[in-house]
Amino acid sequence: MYYSVRGNVIHLGQNIAVVECGGVGYKCQTTINTLKNLKLNSEAKLYTYLNVREDAMELFGFYTEEELSAFKTLIGVSGVGPKVGIAILSVLSPQQIALAIASDDLKSITMAPGVGKKLAQRIVLELKDKFNINTSSDSTIKGTKAVANVGNISKAIEALSVLGYSSADVSPFISTLDPNLPVEQLIGETLKLMGRN
Image 1 (cartoon, rainbow, N blue to C red):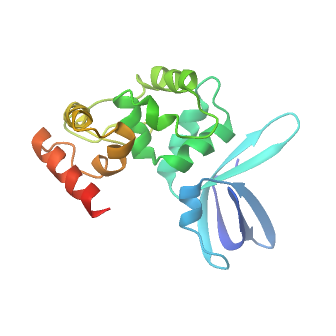
Image 2: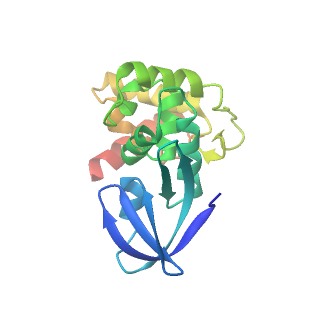
């Protein structure tokens, strides 16, 4: 029903942003990642999803279309409701979610509040086929840009785990690199990025 809302941000709270459009304040439940991009009393555009239940209508807003697409994909998994979708996208970017699914990284997914090991396994299982691995172009989770050459990334993550780094430690850094780089270069660049942080 609503594709997006654009207007002045009049309130920011815990997982809440209120955008005033034409005199009406739209309360959007959102992620920490989206909140980081919003400023009070500044104009913003949020891509929205309207969740209709018997007892409520809830509007969810996202700073990017990729985040909205990842949210819709996540809530398509049985047992994942909008609140869990928001929780996952508050700790992982759409690219990191795609990487976690491709590399069976349950630990990263369970970092989200309310997500246990069984639910993380279900997310990986149900979304694995929706993650199209294509070595010549970007992969997508229903339009979410993700990592292309998952094989090299997985090998690099595995090698880094031998050095004592967990998937959760390296995922935020390795997901920013070109996935078509050789495994050795991926490892070296990831260690450099981690050293800077």
